[in-house]
Each structure stands twice: as C-alpha cells, then as structure tokens.
Image (cartoon, rainbow, N blue to C red):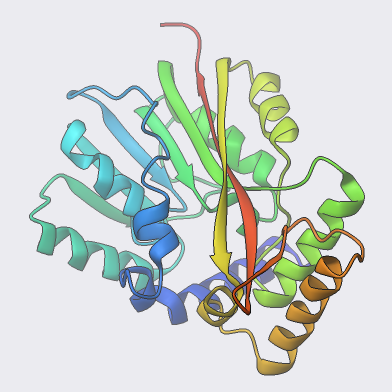
Length: 263
C-alpha cells in the first residue's frame, strides 16, 4: 500500500477529474438518485450542526441541509468542493459550508458536531479505522454518527477479489470493509445503538467502468472476470449477470448508524 500522502494525492487527482460528473445525474445516477435512502433513518434535528466527512461535492450534506441548522462538507479535493458550492448556490442553500480538510485529521475540535456522516468515502481511505475514530472524536455526546459505503463480502477470499477488481477500475480504491468490521470498529470506540441497513444496488457494467475512466484494456479485463463468474468461475463479489445481452453487476451498499454515549 502507498503511504497516506501518496494515496491522498492519487485520490485528489482522480476526483479532480470526476468533479463535474458528480453533479450530472446522467453520468452519476447512483450518487444522485439510487442513494437517496441512505441516512433516512438517521435522526437529525433543526438545531443540529452536521458534518459530512470526505464529502466530495457534498451530496449528503446538501440533502440534509434543510433539516439542520448548518451542514459542513469537508473534502481533500478543491475541485469537488467548488462544484458542490456552486450546486448549493443553485439550490438556494445558504446553510452549507465547504471546507478543505483530511478525513484522517479533521480540522475541528473535539465534540463540535451533533451529527457526523460519511458517504461512499471509506473505500478510498487508507485508514478507515482512523476516519471513523476522527468522526467519533468530533461528535458531541448524544450525537449521531452515520457511515454509508459499498461493503465487502464477508468471505475474505471473495472480498480480496472484489477489491482487486475495484482497484483495477479505480486506482483510488483501497479496501471495501465488510459490515461486521464497520460495526466492530464503532463498538470499539464506545459507540452505542449500532444499526445496519443494506441493499444490493445493480449497475450496468459499461457506465460503471466508464465513470471511473478505466482504460480500455483494464475495462476489458474486468468484464472478462465478470463473464467468467457467470460461466461458473470463481466469485468476484460483484454478482454479475447478463441481462438482454448487457453485462450488469451488483454492489451491496450499507448504512451503519450509531450514537455517542454521554448526553
């Protein structure tokens, strides 16, 4: 694995190129539409201060902004923040703030926020355990934490193949966590009332590969492994199927929520 700084630069390079597409529902239907159910069960109040960690363009922060006092979106990539700020202005949202910062070293004091969330970010982070610990650190007692992401198969061998294919598609990918590991990490930090909601979300393979800018030879190799599984080969963790001549796959998305004790 590369060191944190090397990987951070790689993430910024990848997402700087993707910033415009993040706000285009034609190219990013998964983030702009399919993920609307995430955080619906997370309790938020009108007086809450909310933090969206590794927020990208702040989709989640903007979606929840109307239900809280202030939402802060923090991300490493300047282009993503700029795209999110422009989108917030177009939506007429005046209570969303955008700040550059590292999910592994959040630029906030302890116990600063009532709600801390992160969506589709942990699998791009070298130390997701540190990310979750930082999220818990800046959360006030009685505050609510929500982590939503693609999750790995609970079989380690299948998960390794899943991660290898994900990294081929997108070099900023690190490791997809299984639900059991996310839950254990939250419990190790003393968080309580941990709940999990998960769904399998299907994608057509070609747009999924194109969205990450996978080179032709890499995309062909990934498709080959998916088709091999359909033909009876080893499981990839991506649940491929052939539908009316088109290759599809499925990812499992999970939303894990918890409460920080002490209020």
